[in-house]
Length: 171
Image (cartoon, rainbow, N blue to C red; front, side, top):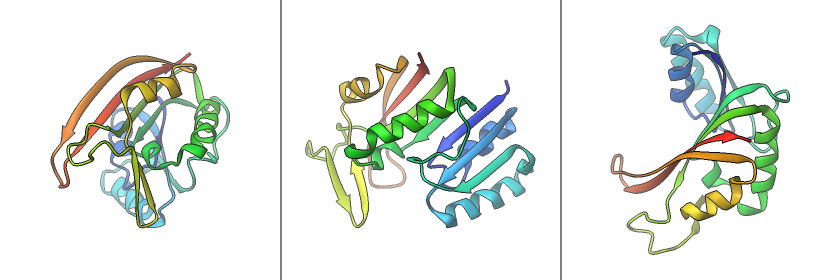
C-alpha cells in the first residue's frame, strides 16, 4: 500500500507511525505542542521521520491542499468538537480528502456504561460528545458511504468507554 494519510488530532503519533511503517506518507496534526514534540521523537525512534510530517494546528483549519490525502483517520478528535463547529470540521475534511478517499472515524458511544444517557459534558476546558450510531450516519451520510460500523468496549486505561468505529469512503 501507499499514499498519503492524515491523522486528525494525532496526539503522540502512534497512528502516523503505523501507516509510515506500512508504506504511507503520514501527516499528523494536533493542537497540543507537547504531543507533536513527542510524536516527532517517536518517529525518530521508529526511524520513519522521512515518511512523517507532524505539526501543531487545528482540525477546523487544515493547512493542506485540496484533494491531498488518500486516507483520513480521526481517533476521538471529532467527539471533542462542539456541534456548532461540526460543519467546519466536515468542510475541511472534505476539502483535503481525495474523491473516493477513505475516512476512519472513532467516537465515544452513547452506550458508555457510566454515562447515564448524557450526550455531552465538559471536563475543565475539554468538551466530550457521546454519539448514537444514527447521529454519525446523519452527519456523514451525505458525503460518505459507510462501509463498516463496530461498537467496542475499551476497558484500559480506566475509565471504561464504549467507542464506535466507522470505516467510510468519500462519495
